[in-house]
Length: 122
Image (tube, rainbow, N blue to C red; front, top):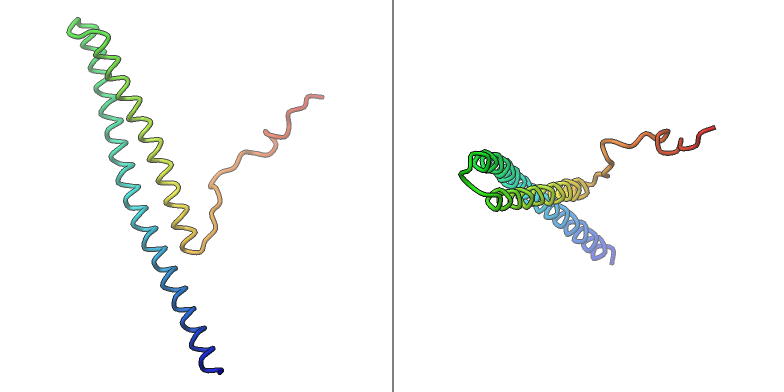
């Protein structure tokens, strides 16, 4: 009896270790992918910012109209939204990896409590 219980406990422990290692491996892969998407989104946003500036120059010079500038600005806003979404995905991947490693997550900053609670004036 005792031998089979021990074997079951060892088997359950090994399964827990394998699952934990899989979570860490998945977390690392997800973080790497999120970083790559974030870098691509940031590069695109910078390029659209430059394009918008060029369209403004073209419009002032009479080489293009307002529609061209507005189209570029819409693309710029879209790329900035993609950067924000990539920021969220990156933060989520980092937190998931920290959890998979067994750590707790806490923000690096916090609002000063005195500025939030001191709203009364005597």
